[in-house]
Image (cartoon, helix red, strand yellow):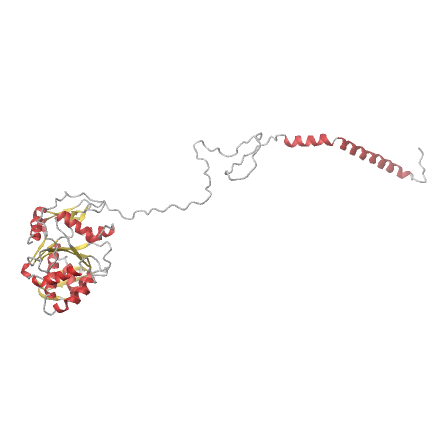
Length: 405
């Protein structure tokens, strides 16, 4: 073929030939690609589904986690330390958060119950007369007088009864009997759970602490009944403040002190320290605060002498109440005093006692103190000093207390 040199210059002939050949090469490739489309597709799919030889760490999540399971063909080679066979499986999360468990308080104090004394047989006493219905009798009222420690006016706190006096009033014989019981007397405790024995002044404490029916007075009454065979009909509980109010309400008391009394370390009421107390011998007029000190002081003497002084204050208060100057004010005084003490005396009981009181002469009142001749000083294993009762020596006193029906 001859090219017209006038149409296509010589220097452009190679370029035209190359374009021509390239054009047909592209067409040929397109044709081949269209013809081979299906095999290429199959080849691509095969390549994607063929296992890939690589190391894979399988992810194990909680059952609730959503993930695609790995094909079984993939070799799962763990890169972490395997869980030993004894390890517990991962816990399943609950659908809701459970409330925190109640915290159990840890003990802050411990009470070691010391060795128990030999059980005391309840003495065989003559029965007390039935409760009276008239001022002339017959009948008898046994009243438990309790003085609790501290200046707190709450009579339902777990206090100790540091003054314990049994008062028996006989309406037919117009007599009265009184016996003081030492607070450190070690006795069996009834109905107070694991505490089966302790000082008798703790019965009130445990009665309030454990919430026994009737509280502290009932617990102490049970001890007096089971240990000493005494029937308790009524009780009167006083604290320091009510004692002071009662003595001040009757204008104070006059007491004959047999010998000088000295205490170099009497505790202050607010607990800030001590003071020196001196009582002279002879007749002394005391207001409520002074009478309380006189009834409590014991550093210069024994607890037995302290109980005798407490009885002395009660006799002086009785004499003051029955004096001609005080009798007209007695109804008002009783109303004031009853509001300051804890008692189960009813108005009818107080009326009976008020009727009988002027008829009971001083010489018709007998009093006893369970003293050092009736107890044995003992030191427990924990070092505590207590008094063990000698029932052979105490029983004659208890029998006399119940005589005179």
